[in-house]
Length: 430
Image (cartoon, rainbow, N blue to C red; front, side, top):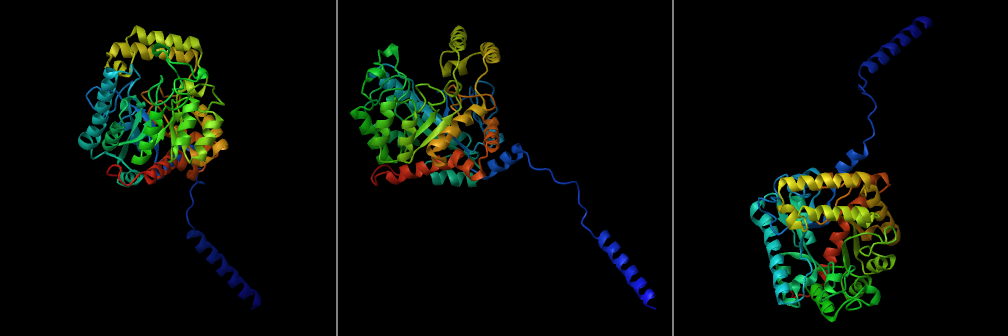
């Protein structure tokens, strides 16, 4: 009897196991770990990605450079590639080149600046208002991002465009400018440049420059920028001018597109002293994807590229955009041959500079910029559509999503908010 009972129990157990087996979840092959590219794509959906420096020609928004269309070279940033590359926001730059400081020069600079303001506003207010919006505050950036739009911000490069008139800075602020770059190549009335120009008979910085840093007018312009809530930008400034500006500003200061001098001893790059001062003021250095600022470029290559450009009449940004298809093709072909002989910097070198800055001044004081259409572009990040490649390299170096969010936009938004808090109540409307 006992044997029969045990037999029945055993049979029941076998039937139960069989039933449970048939009801088991059907498991497929073990899920593969996501690739760095897949993780980067997810991160770009979650964070706000901001490039703090993109140059534009004076005819931006015209048929020669329609930002709503996919453009060929020399365009590196347009709405289709911003979407594809997960690049949410861009500071479009109102840049004017340094020329003679006289009435004609000042008038031409202001005219060029106004044309670029108008072009940017035409894009955001008329041409593509359903796709991209103009942000005047950090809150605007977050709101537009939440609406699924691309975001335009405006920065000024070269205080030459304000001549000697602080009221012009107020006007530019009302048009949407939210950072003010003091100087470009060549000293101006506000500050000494990191790269004095012989053609203007600029005094070398080793001999004190023109102002030994900032002029009194430069200090007044910084105070006015603070009053307005406009960030002050020290990229292109001499060492003395950058340190003076950081000390003079009552709000955090930015370097909108610079590299690390310790890794590449270029006068445009920031020394440890400058970066530490920037940190103490609460500011941020935006590490730039500019070949010559990331590594040394042989003089032979620079000369050959310059000669090629001159031979084709491509001596300015506007001239490059205005060139015919044949001239553009010849230039691209020539540059490709030079890059094959002397490889340009790549994304790994860009992140080497980011790594150095993060170790020196901390993750809260470092960001990223391209300088696209102003000479920027490196192997792996040559246009907006390749933006995730930078994130992939950051992931490979061990940066977390939280840290990447700070580098790509969180830090510059913090400084933008701090500049807004420093403004005077009676300055402007926002």
